[in-house]
Image (cartoon, rainbow, N blue to C red; front, side, top):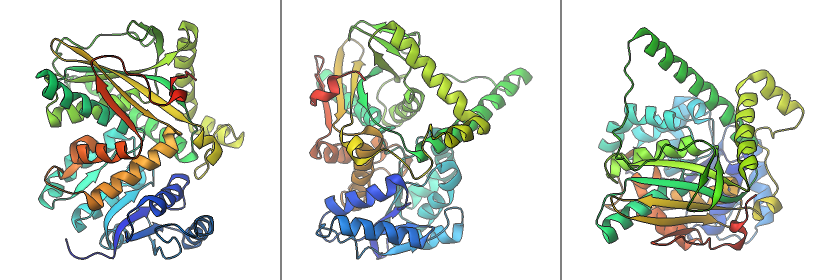
Amino acid sequence: MTTRNYDILVWGATGFTGSRLVEYLALNAPAGTRVAIGGRNRSKIEAVRAKLAAKHPMAPISLESMDILIGDSQNAQDMHAIASQTRVVASTVGPYSIYGEQLVRACVEEVTDCCDITAEVPWVHDMNRELNDQAVRNNVHIVSLCGFDCIPADLGCLMLAQYSREHIQQPLLHVKGSIVGIRGGVSGGTMATLGNQLGIEARRLWKGVKAQMSGSSTPQSQPSNGKETNRAVVHYDQTLGRWQGFWVMSMINSMATKWAGRELNYGPGFSYAETMTARNVFMAIAQTLGFVYLAALMFFSATRNLLYMLRAIPRPGEGPSDKFMKSGFFSLHLEAFSETEVFYGKVSGSSDPGYSETIKYLGESALCLAFDRDESFRPGIYPPSVAIGNKLLDRLRNRGCQFDVARKIIPASHDSAKKVQ
């Protein structure tokens, strides 16, 4: 790689998450790290920089000295000009299926590593199919899914698979995850991505239905290893002694962890399922129906716009207060199955999972790409566990994130994470 002007570029610095990522890097990056900030509106970026500089005048990485790069995410020439100036891009500009493609293409061609917080797994698969071979040839690491979806599940399964191989000498076959406690807010960017992703998934589903009806497609399924239990959406978990309901990120995390399991050979037919704990069966049903109802409202543009108008959901650029984010937490219980053994994992965080924890995950992913690269890194377009797994896991543990595994159920390290919200 030729000499670059910057170590890390934060792309999308004016957004709710992007501006806080700039702040995180200013406070936590090693001294001398060259950080630039970018987006499409110079005046807004200058305002963010000035606000953060006034808030942290003695930050280890000077906010006032951060250079500004301007470009349009959908303009290929702009993205090449930006990617060529930095070693790593940390992108918070979504929906990524709309605003992320040109950046990924530019990074692959300009030999620039990139990480993002998309939850759009099908889009990441598309980028992998189209550009992975070139990324491998160029020794480029495009690390997607670096937020709350899917770091806890993704690195949690990596941790369990390694434990199973090293201590049990058996492959990992199935992991059941349960969100046993959570408190967090939501930003407008997340809601915009949700609406876009629902539309994409509906179109994919309809194409599949038409193909099935025409007889032109045969469904492909991974062989079962006999460890995954067909559970109802609402069910009683005997291990936890609690009712379980639908969890909004379960499908995303399942796709990401199964992909990683195939790439890293966790075990034959490895699978992952995820639910959310409820106080009782009625709450489990209510939260499941609530997620379905919200998805229906976000799917149609008319109802989505009505929610914006009524201020029922935040608009892009808006999100929870700093005070609320500091009061957040989450706790993910993991039950792992090898051929003959059952063991457990715990992943938890002590702040808002969708924002404070996500910013930590993305910031450390960017720093990992910039400063920790070694032979364990895998070039290509992959989830974090595949590309930078153990190095990132070490970083997050050093930042206070709980990633533990044992033969018995592990209590959460944060008392607040024991509560069911």
